[in-house]
Image 1: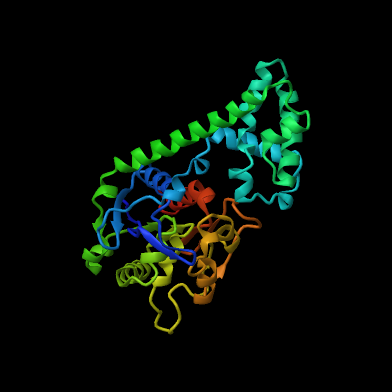
Image 2: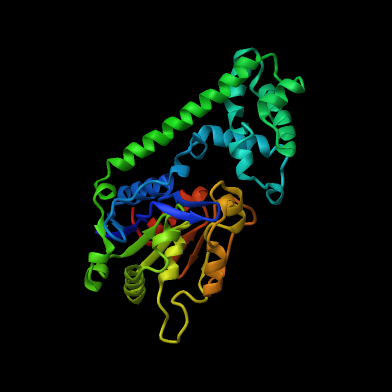
Length: 339
């Protein structure tokens, strides 16, 4: 059976410029979706933390707006593509998906249809209002009310659609927490520090999910350095996602004196994405993308922030951000030739 070392941060705090000892951890969605994908494909997955301490999910990653239902996200995509036809024109910021109520478009459209509008008419109203909200950084419901685009719905009906989405998204977040809590390895992980080089060599791959925690306890960890050296020597798969590539910075030098991953193409959370999230705005101690490039990586990011983006170079697989989770996990499954 293929064995995957699932390396999770056990950090609980990160020192930010404006918030010392800020709560942190791993990113719940990335960890859960990847873990479940690997298990479903038939791999034996061993959860590791550097010190054997149980990992904790990053509180920020549990906010409802990181857990929108797929149907709502897909409808939102169909709306913004009505006024952003060229992929190069699509510049979705985190504020647009979390603060402007745009994700509630599908719920509002359902109410418009129930009130007698056709699906096409409802979509057109939502698209018109969304375009104004998008460009002016305004809330969707406010735009619909102030510009006569409510389609006959009351303010309460519009607000209820937004509240319904928030409740459903919070429910998904809660469900993901419960599923993670039910995984034995997340409650009682194996300490990476307890493994010998020979035990490390028994793994066919290592995967590190993100969250800001990996920036705290993985980059300078000597046991992470051993793990990467052992697995690289045997040509095993090395994969990570979002902030997870911070663990690559622990890699030792090669015989030629260069970093182990010198000249490898890879991706990771971008500076732009960091500057858009609330934690990054508190002042990161260092930026991951910059550190990887300074170490010698060839950094390869998507044309715009928050796009799903995966880079495969030899035995190294990296994903850019949380939206890259499924694609990164699938790339790992494919590279390991799992079902």
